[in-house]
Image 1 (cartoon, one colour):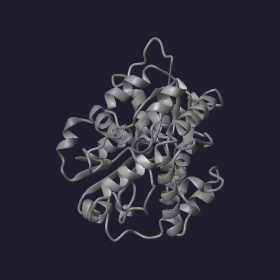
Image 2 (cartoon, helix red, strand yellow; image 1 turned 90 degrees about the horizontal axis):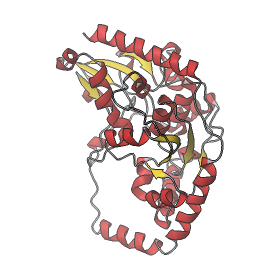
Image 3 (cartoon, one colour; image 1 turned 90 degrees about the vertical axis):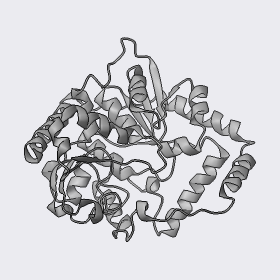
Length: 344
């Protein structure tokens, strides 16, 4: 069996995706991993045509357990897969199977205490940018200025879990920062930094636990990051849509479904992995010069962002009801048992 999950082609880590390697090895019988004909889609917005094209799935027994839609159209041939559970009701509606709406399968951490043990004293306020914001911003300096503890999503899972074990509050742009916090019963607050944050996936998950999605926008942490955000908005406009984080009424289920269908109308002819990497001469030098040119005002950006997240941390936080969380995890566990029976 192969567990499909996103791996950055450059080798960069992302703990939300990397949880797949930890959780499924702990939960599933070892003999299942010897069957080369079985593929499992678990944690991540990987239920899409870019990540699982026909070239990867043809002739395989495909199972979906907690994955969500997002970023691209639905994968070709999904109608012939065994869909046991998906991340939430938005993905479930796209596939026309409302009963498979469970929650993100990272919630299964709650039945695996050996992966993270909460510390006796939990007094850290964690700040977690999305991995792309961590690439472009100076969020380590922002977190320090705000008196918070940075959790970089590009760190290995054991390091990430150790940070969560000491947390009393999580302020996060990374969705799996919120998911893991909620799983460990740690209050969390959603923020948006980059304009390409995907509200569809957030709302898919929050709906699964009867929660709203009301992110607070935080400004860029550097002049370079601000320029990057402007580029993202221009790219979206060129494609005939607004940047995803700017979609109106994030809590409108029908609106998000309609936006998804408009944004991802077609299956790409080539996947991201098949696209040639463009090597522009002198690109690194240009980027370096641009960063340097935009850096004189960085201290102002850092100070402003730190002030914002301090204020956010003192405001409204979220945590799903114990009853809702327990129901969703029970549904995931039932899906796991069905998978073991069907795949075995």
